[in-house]
Picture (cartoon, rainbow, N blue to C red):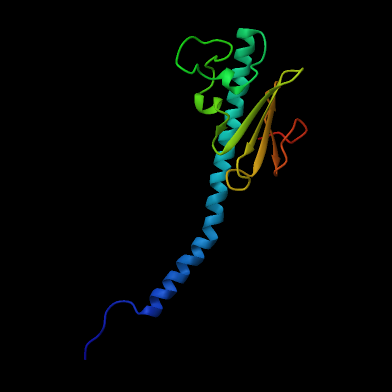
Length: 152
């Protein structure tokens, strides 16, 4: 009498079903952790802009009117008001980490909003920063404002 070695088809199906259940439970957590990391990077990028705006203001006497003005010159060259080289080109472009950054000058100083390009996929929150240097967040699609809770 010969004995067969190996797994039967039913045993393989059971193993695949268990793996599928584990993945179904784990994938939402992995996605949540990834988005949390991206959103933390966005908040740090906003703080980078706040620091750059303080430097820009001390050099030129007013806040930068755009992210490009805080970024590097197009072809090297000397730092000047329209290209102060205070933030990296990737951030000066206005799009980074799946977010779109919008800088606006106001009578009191400036505002910076960061909104996900695709809500839910590239981010779950919107962010706001002004000349006070405090990053605010809004859980949802509505743009964050100075009245939104502080990012911690």
